[in-house]
Image (cartoon, rainbow, N blue to C red; front, side):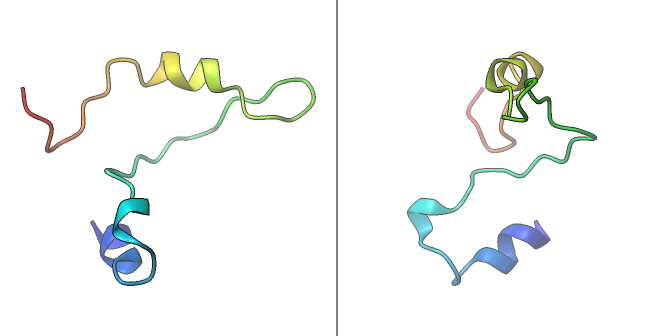
Length: 53
């Protein structure tokens, strides 16, 4: 909540994230790029707090 409140007024509303999640580490490829497929698998079952059920 604090992060979203801090960004409010500093960036455009359409650019504001829906939610913020803290993770221990971000998976990387051998060349150092972010491994997006692993992130998608990690957050596959994640639901936003204000999403309709």
